[in-house]
Structure formats: C-alpha cells, structure tokens
Length: 382
Image 1 (cartoon, rainbow, N blue to C red):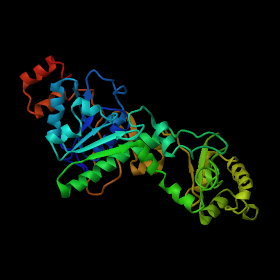
Image 2: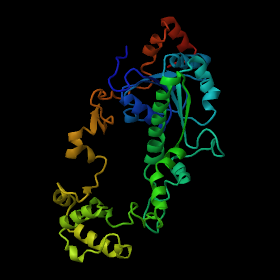
Image 3: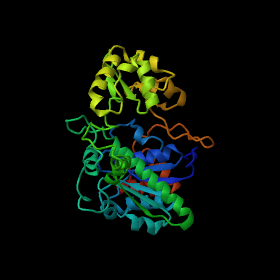
Image 4: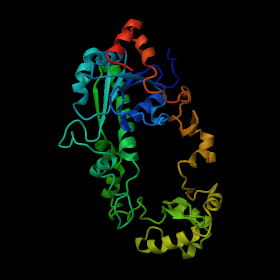
C-alpha cells in the first residue's frame, strides 16, 4: 500500500493525466509538498517517460491505462471519485473527447478541482493551435526584453512559460481553488495559460515603464544588462560573475571590492557615462579569476556573486547549508520548496517505472484479480 507522505499537503489526492513539462511540473510541486499523486500513463500514446530518471516525475505512483477504451476511462473516473485534484495539459477539447472533461469528472465528484494547463488558454483565436515556450513568451511580451542591445531576443531556456508561467502558475491556481472549496464545498475548473502566466511575470516592467525607469530599447535599461552595475562580466579564467549593485551603498561596496578610486568612477545613474563605467568595471573584474573575486566580495554588500552552472550550484556552500539540492537515486536535483518549520516534506522518491503501480492502484479501487485480468485482456491497462 502507498504510505502516507509528510508535508503541508499530506492527504491531498491528485490524479495526473500524463503530459509534458508544465503539467508534470505542477504535479511535482504538489507531490513534493506531500500530495499523493497518481500519474495516468496513456497506453498506446506518446512515450512521455523517455527519461526514466526524470526529476519531473518524482514522488508519485504511475499506472498504465488505455483511455481509448471505456474500461480505461472508467478506471480514471474511479480514481477521480477519491481525488481532490485532476490535472491535464492537452489542447482544448481533448479530454472532453476522452470522456474525462470537466463535466464528466464533476459528475463523478463535484468537489474535484480540475486543473488544466495550455499554451494559449481554453479560448481565443490561437487556443487550438500548436506552440512551445518560445511562442508563448513571444506573445506575452516576456521574450522581447531579454537580450543584448541591438541584438535579437534570446530564449531563456524554457523556464518562463513551461515552468514559472506554466506549471507553477497552475499549482498556485489549484491551491487557490482548494482554499475556496473550504467555503463553497465545490470544485471548479482552473484554466491556466502559459501566455497569461508569463505575462503575469512581467508585471514589474509595467510599473518601471510607467515611472519612466524603463524607457530604452532591449539591453538599455536598469535590469536587462543596460546598466553596467547590473550585468555579468567575464573574469580572467574565462568564467563569469554577476553584479547587482543597484543602490548607492551597494555600488560603493563594489567599488571598494574592486579597488577602484571613487574619484575616477563616474556617477552610476548618469546614462551618458555608462559606457565608461562599464569599461572600468570590466577591466577591474577581468584582472582576477572568478573565485578570487568571490572571495574578495564575501562578507560585503557588493552584490557580486559567481555565475554557477546548474552542475556547480549544488556544491556551493550556501546551497549545501540550505539543502537546496538533493540526491535521489543517484540524480542530483533541486529539493522540494519552500521550507516549512512544522510540516517539512519527505525527500521525494525516485520516478517509478511507467505503469509499475497499476495493479496496486487497481486493487485499492476495488478491482479483484479476475477484474484486473479482464482489463488486461481488453487492452485497458498495462
């Protein structure tokens, strides 16, 4: 039997219809915090578990179900009867055609929060078209500011739409709907769009622009690398440091760490002097290795830190002290977060082999040996 997990969401039951990137990440967030997630792998569909040790699939059980059969749909609906949350990440109308849309799910369990994540949303002119992270942040305005002056926008991996404005956005919506359910007793549909979510991440830029603090083109502003005191610089060993000395007192600390003569340093907010200031900072930083500079800045408010690769970050003393990363089945990966003082979550279990929990879950749903054999013979399960 599946042991009860620890964490602030312990006891919450989630059914996840297998998909890619944002939906699994939302369920990872919930599972990390203690929710019991059952992932329904669709038999005969795309093998979305191409990476058997994928951290996005940690901490849940997995069953193999053919949702193209009535028996397979019935299995999922039986799971729904015991669930608090149902999560899917398909184009609009797909789960309705499966027989697993909001109407069918709520007919079985009106308390279920039905979380759905798409690129464009459930409606609108683009709702049924294909796209990926780069397309969604292109439309939301989140991609345009990222890049160097006079150059094309640079895709920030797929962090903004798939994960920050997608999976995390959906998880937040699900938790909000669960809170509301305490009053109404009813579930509802959470329509999370990666365009909407990544647009929300740009909220601060609109305030900066309204205040006259973001009036340049790409790469010419305060937080996009335009300001020389908020940028990355190459060090003598070909590595990089990040400088974020925005405020005057932090900038003064940076000048001291770099052993610059304050009398020769241009005023930091004089944009006409930014090219000269950038030259001074680049020259001073370029004389030292990354780790030498980091040691110099340690214990100061110079806001100078190393630019670590994802593979270096787990070994930094601060991340080690905080337990920011964990090792699960030989794979180093980010730990669950945030941290809770009374209800800390367990270290997540590694991903299960696709469909490996099918029989266990079916028995919990009340299927006996003969029933399970019949489902297998009908091609409804793996």
